[in-house]
Image 1 (cartoon, rainbow, N blue to C red):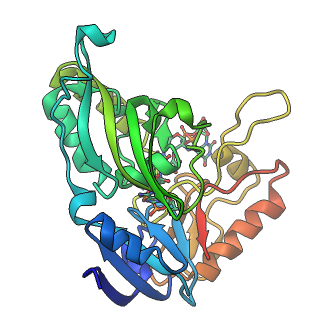
Image 2 (cartoon, rainbow, N blue to C red; image 1 turned 90 degrees about the vertical axis):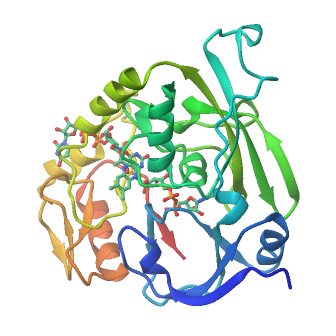
Length: 293
Ligand code: FAD
Ligand code: EPU
């Protein structure tokens, strides 16, 4: 026994939507505990900000990263930073844990005047979850600020760079259940004011998003036959679905690509609205959320 914390708990409490039944939660603080947790079927939980967990819960273990996987070293690595590495203002940090909450990390980077990741402001993820799905906004995405990542899977531990991965919009190319345990950030020296200004611009674009409990946008913005990307929110809105309800879940009146929990919603309510959207919107759209299981 390596000392990982194991408890049976409702998973909804770890998610921004706030729905979902019970599972065995394994909170791991180092690689030995992580290896033990991975010895039976598992899922890896980040900030829970993109998840719809089933009302009946999960049979797999749910792994949460803590301890060593939640530590932050933003010290520029002298071996990899500075003019001799191409960019006089470029720097590569020490390791930042996959379990580190992204909002607090961005706050630290802003104070230091370190740029490249500020476009992801407002995303309530952990660094590992943001990397796994290359979370982003129109102002930037997570892969804008990555130097290298450590990934642990049942096959072992490897360190890769973004060039090794087939990443794109909202997709890192990292296989499911391969765990991003930590990353080095690739940043540029700027000033706290300049970084803050870009954060403010990205924040402003969020003004129309709902304030209720939600797992963010339900669908990815689809690519139309002419190659242009159409906003899923506009398509759902044009189908007349804003304000539609199933139980205590609702398609947000503020923005149609958000389903919100009005209080006491179930996963079944959310599934009903996702099905309604799929039936009524003529364009095929890929789900952005994850449905567990
Ligand atoms: P979770 O929701 O916990 O998990 C999502 C997936 O990532 C799961 O498959 C999980 O297994 C995997 N995962 C989590 N951690 C790791 C890890 N360490 N290693 C490997 N896999 C892992 N998204 C955007 O892209 N842009 C936005 O602007 C945006 N705005 C949002 C606003 C709100 C209010 C909310 C609630 C969500 C928003 N989202 C947005 C969605 C969400 O924040 C992102 O999808 C985010 O990447 C999810 O990260 P997480 O850590 O919460 O992961
Ligand atoms: N629109 C409507 N009706 C609606 C919603 C939107 O007509 O109900 C229109 C807007 O008027 C606008 C267009 O659709 O012309 C785009 O809307 P918005 O500016 O809100 O951007 P988005 O494409 O819907 C994307 C990301 C968000 C991110 C914002 C801001 C996706 C799926 N969504 O939204 O990310 O926060 O840009 O950068 O790419 C997420 O991924 O979970 C997420 C919240």
